[in-house]
Image (cartoon, rainbow, N blue to C red; front, side, top):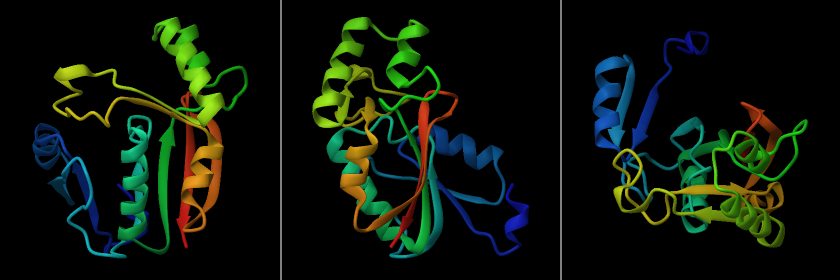
Length: 184
């Protein structure tokens, strides 16, 4: 794992799901795992991290949580540090975007996808609390569901504190966009 980064590499992993952290501690070596709260702050110092990645995390945050966690990542990353994230969006990639991806595979109800399209076009963000009272793998939070974020909404929320270093529509399994933000 990231051997090319050198022997002094320090890796952290966090999740609000205590069971997932327990599993990770038993299965993955040389990574310091900890259970995090569902809301910031993390138990990390200001400017203490060079890079963070969040694959299929912003695709679940409601609008308040999305902004709070962007601010938290800005706090813990060093200047010029990178945040790599993925999210659902409307932007087309080949013939797909996240809404079309779920429709074509019949993974979401058409009425929910219509609502998503309308919300994305009008506000740049859509959120549905799809996990209900049982939650998602132990995460029960009204700000954790299924989110779709337009590139414009994200750009509006991250500037001027971040630079968009990379934005690849549909690059994660022809569904989620891959975004690399550099902390200014």
